[in-house]
Length: 414
Image (tube, rainbow, N blue to C red; front, side, top):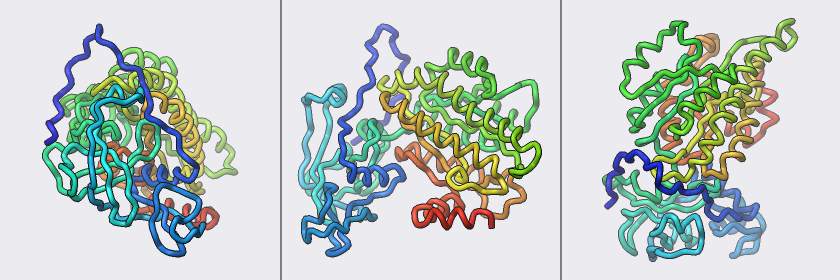
């Protein structure tokens, strides 16, 4: 049975610091279909369009009928544990630091046999397990088997925590305390067990409604952070950079403007400075130290979350400036993901539809409530996702982009 995760002790400065290492990452191009599924929390395998059989590992032709019509489809998540082993010695540098490690052979309900990482509460051979696809520290998809029924403290299993970014006992920085989502995010993080939450506030002398609510929450510290000032970001990074294990970038700048307006270029410049350049300043200040702490045990850095508009994927003309800025943020986020991956840091993009805030008051429902957004981000951290789509609008655009991106572009202004 999994033991509850104890609050980490303060690190001994004389103790050895484990260097960030990555598990084996070689994959075929076909296997990245599994990576896509794992990034959004789905369990998908190749399924033959001719004979209907699921197959694994990923390949070019069906092993049963030799058809090339193999596409990734959602598969049943159940399976039977055929055998298990406890690995004590390995030549791989990443796993050598984490021995012993449990692995097993599972026969999936849909047919194939897979070698999988094994939760500590799965019991012995012959038991039913629930399968999932997870992203490991290298950003590649791996199988993970968990008990079918909940067990005490199962979320604290060491192998499971290696594949997720659970906020429990971790310290978090939220970049913009003036955001309408700040209070909901802080409450959700506290409920998830975050040890300390730093909330950035620009120009603290300016009052804002949420200040009293934030100050009333235990374990919250308001810190000076102005994302439009490189000096402000650098000074905060020097002060608390080595303490942050999860960074949540909520900075936004919503200003409606039409493309042919005389001042549209200035509006775009302001939006870019707050969002794109703000993210760039954060990345340069906090990214290196987080990457260096990716293997620092239970207190290691694990995740960077960017709150993005789903219209960064498909421009909404009525909020064209907002869409352009978030499209640039998405590209920068992918760059950041590549830079942080050597440290095993997960970069999560949380795509949301229109929020239920004053800037979107003219937009008809459905909208995303701050609490729903906060809960979705916590769920994504606990499940180890890489892309999260929050709200009906975001999920609809995701599905339609996958089906016909040109139709989404044509219908965006209607």
